[in-house]
Structures are given as C-alpha cells and as structure tokens.
Image 1 (tube, helix red, strand yellow):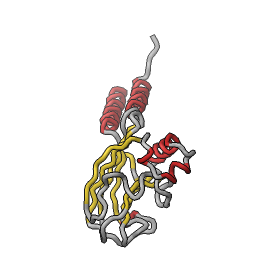
Image 2: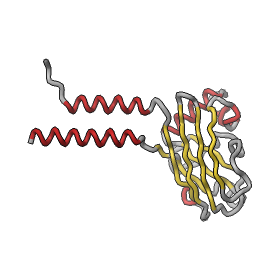
Image 3: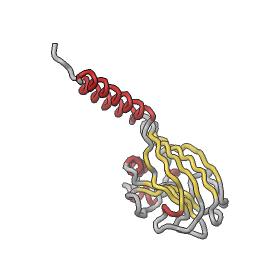
Image 4: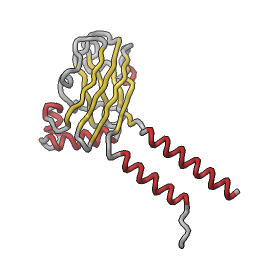
Length: 194
C-alpha cells in the first residue's frame, strides 16, 4: 500500500470544501461613506450594505441600513463593473430598486430579487450587455464576484452619489474553521516528526 501524505489529503479536502462553499450563496458587504465616493464627498452619512448573491437560484438579496444623509435620498443602486476607485454606470433599476426608501435621510431595506427579472436591471445595462437579461445577469454576477461592483446612495446635495461602498466578499465561517483545522493538523504532523 502506498503512503499518502496527510498534507496532500488535507489539501484535497480544502479544495473540495472551497468548491462546495461556492455552490450556494456568497455574501458581500461594504461600509457606506462619503469618503468612498469618487471623488469623495464631505457627507457625514454612513451605512452598511450587504448583498447575498445566489447564482444557483439566480437571486440577489440586498440589505441596506443608512443614516445621516445631508438631504433626502433620490436614488440608490448597484453600479457595475469597474475596479475599486473608479466610476461606472448603473446596473440595477433606476432610480432605485423597488421598495427602496427614497425621500429620507435614514432608512433600512431588505429585499430579494430575481436576477432573471428584466425590471431588476437598468435598461442601459441590459443593452450594453448583449441586449438580453441573461447577458446582464452574467455580467453582473461576474462583476460582483470579482469585487468590481459598488452600491451608492444619491441625494440633491451630491447628485453623483453621497455615500458609497465597493462590495467585498465575506469569507464563509466554514472557511475559517477549515483553515483552523488544517493549521492544527499541520502542527500535529510537525510535532510528531520533531
């Protein structure tokens, strides 16, 4: 019987776990602030955005809490697809996704949308991505996964955007547990050899 390295088995297990983790939903978060706008604004507004992307079920849940805008908001949406620190066009519905609180300086929002619904997208984004909802969906999913999407809230004071955040992937809790187990296993192997 051939010897199979525990490190090799552990590496294979980690790779399989990573593939399994991405089969479900992926969470992205960001802290909304005027400093994150390009160019930065002097707004004291703050907020948190959480986007839960589920490519398998073709849904996107958007959770937003914001407060202290300088004037009531007029728009709020996801922009895609450009790297951190750059501006790009609006990907989702204009002026905001259905149900988003407009005309307020503070608010909360939590809604799940179908990525196959044409009403979810800015028509210009659909046109720019092959003219189909499927093309818009593929581009938006790829942009969010690449961290090339951002969420912002607009107001009359800052019509180009008062507060903003890039959407950054949040590691799965199981990834931390798996990494801890791997490090513990490597430590035990080194201890036995030493």
